[in-house]
Image 1 (cartoon, protein in one colour):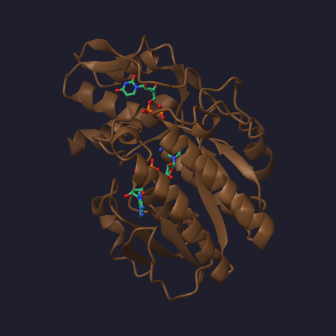
Image 2 (image 1 turned 120 degrees about the vertical axis):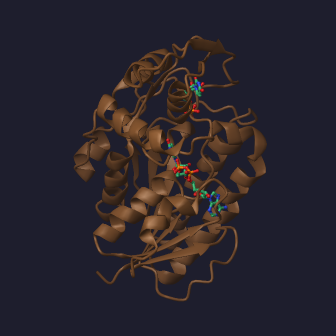
Length: 312
Ligand code: NAD
Ligand code: UDP
C-alpha cells in the first residue's frame, strides 16, 4: 500500500504494536517519538523493514517530514500515574502544544487524524459503566489533573479542528491496556505486579484493593485503534477497552497464581483521586466499528508474564 502513516509515540508500549500491525498491512510507517518513556528496543525488530522509518522527535516541535502523510495516529504522551507527579508540565504541553502541532500537520496534508484519549477523562466516575456520552467527574487541580485535563483539552482541540476546519479527525478513549512491552519501571499495575511476583518481592496493592479496572490485551486494542481510524466517523468518539471488571486485589491474586510466586500481598496507601471503579461501555465500538476484545485476561497475562520473564 502506498499510504503513509505517522504514528506518534510509536516507540512506546501500544505505539510499537500499532507500528508492527500497520507494517503487516504493508503501509509505510513513520514513527515519531522523543523516547521519554518509549524505547528503541520496542521497535528494533522493525528497523530493517523498508517501509519503516524512525524519527527521534518531540511532537511539540517541527517534525520536519516532507513526504505527504495520509493518516496520523497520535499516541504520544506519558500515560503512567507515577509520571503525573514528576512530569506534569511535560504531559500538559505534549497534549496541548503537541496535539495542536499535529492537528496542523494533518490539516496541511489533508490527512485523517486519530487522537488517543483515555478513560481518565471520566475521572472518578459517577456513571458505571462509562459511556462516551458521560462528561466525567474530574478534579481540575488534583494530582491527576495534568493528565485528565490535558486529554480533555486535547479532545476539545480535536473537535475544534473538526468543526472549524472540517478536519477528518476522531477520538478514542483507551481503557487500561496491558501486554508485552509494558515498561517494567513505569509503575502501572500489571507491570508492577508481574515484576514483583517474578522477583518474589511483595505485591503492592494500593488501598484495600476493592477499586476496579478492566484490562484489555494490546493486540485487541491495536485492532480497535485501526478500525476507529478506518471505519470510525469524523468527529466521533469511541471507548476501547475490555468489559470484564476486576478488583485490583483479585488481579494481584491471579498474577501471584499464574507466576507460582511466593510473594506476599501487601497494602500501601491509596494514591490521591484514584478512581474507585472503571469499566467501559463498548456498545458503540461494537456497533459502528464491528470491534470487541477477544483475548481473555488469563491468556493475555500469561503472554505478558512470558515477556517479563525474558526482560527482568
Ligand atoms: P507509553 O509511555 O509506552 O507510550 C507513549 C509514547 O509517547 C512513548 O514512547 C513516549 O516516549 C512518547 N512520547 C511522550 N511524550 C512525547 C512527546 N512530547 N513527543 C514525542 N513522543 C512522546 O504509553 P502507552 O501506554 O503506550 O500509551 C500510548 C497512548 O495511549 C498515550 O497517549 C496514552 O495516554 C494512551 N492511553 C494508554 C492507556 C494504557 O492503559 N496503556 C490507557 C489510556 C490511554
Ligand atoms: N495499583 C496498585 N498497585 C500498584 C500499582 C497500581 O494497587 O503497584 C492500583 C492503582 O492504585 C489503581 C489501579 O491499580 O487503582 C490501576 O493503576 P494504574 O497505575 O495501572 O492505572 P490507572 O488505572 O490508575 O490509570
